[in-house]
Length: 268
Image 1 (cartoon, rainbow, N blue to C red):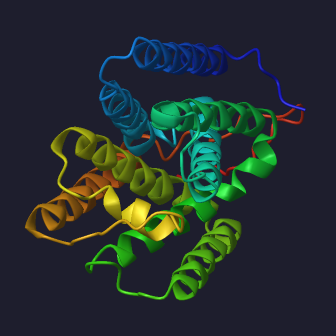
Image 2 (cartoon, rainbow, N blue to C red):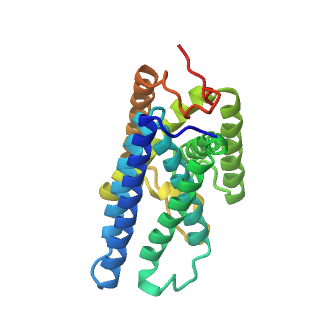
């Protein structure tokens, strides 16, 4: 059982509470926008802001702010899981007609909030899924290097993605320190650029929708703009990883338990 009296831990949970409030507020704004009958393009703005802000935290401070990192890890996994279920089982007329995109966004955020809270409560177990999420993100990145994916078979894509996720899970067991830094930097950079694409509309985001949505026919074209986004993502990932190795590697990722030990070892 962990000791939560440390001031830095309290700071982590203060940031976590602020993020939860913002996510709930964004969900409320989205619902109000849709129910008023006005344009619902506010969805992409809200999602873009959430992804950019959380991506920056994950990319540059994932190793340092352990409480918030665990929450964001659960939030990302929960949101992705919720979105995949909702989009793949969406009926022909949607969920509530024209309100379907807003309902899917809100429910995905709810899945994310639940996942985030669960991961914070089960920190010792949840950290292993960081490698799995990083493997998943890397698989999507590799698939997106070619229009409609380097693997065109849906079954082949699923096997490819699952294999990378499992590989990331096992790598966490052997190289936890490095997976924490490299994984948070890569996932955070990916989130940042998906968020940017909510405003830029380069088609970069369509890669995720194409490879994970089996219910809708979505085309993905790896054009010049998309390749620039991919290159930018790698650059930000490298910068984030270097920053974390330089400034945050000595920090404990999880709080000390009663015996003064930490799950993540301190390296000199």
